[in-house]
Image (cartoon, rainbow, N blue to C red; front, top):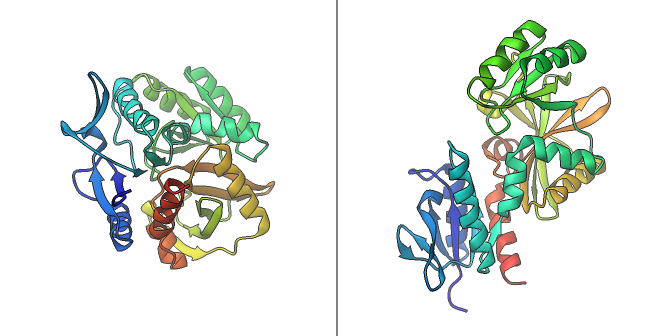
Length: 295
């Protein structure tokens, strides 16, 4: 085997900080590093099934998928997943797998899988009528309405009034989007972000925000190291295994009923995590990919 060629796959014209760190870790280990925009990847169906990048032949041994990009249509999503799936079919080792990414990106599907596994998640529904959103708000009290696919705490609304829930959901439904509605979990002004790579919990941080109910670092939260208990470790590893992921960021909240998993992110950012723990996940992710390639 010649020099191992590894790609960092992201849909951004400018290399993001997390992608830059991954590329540097690949180069530091003396492998060939490529930054690939997913929109420029395609499969040409001729005499063979050829993977092309901007129309040119491309050889790859492994890839770290950082983002599917900003998806505007179902067709765009299907095309990108199809290309990634064919990369896997041709023996390219991808982390995370296209299926794992798709299941995690779909918050509804991921919570269904976690619940079926017996893992603790908040009461949640996805509906397509404003009356149902109104009824759920009346039944659950405070609810959170959020995009089925989204990140960074953007587009999330906390609602306690059934009439407001009716209006918010009607607005969402007017653009043909279903309404993802979740019972609000009371928390002590913080939640927990844990990073997992392979079968190892790298660590965790509290994300603390005393002025807003949103605790995303992108929303201005501060961070503090969490002591990883055996319960948190088991919960995190079980969730990642359930969704078939190689690496992930988990958002976990402390409720009156114990821990609840809010979300499992297959393409986590880790700036706040690194600031709080001093741990840089990029090297662990690259080493995990190399280990899978060499099996």
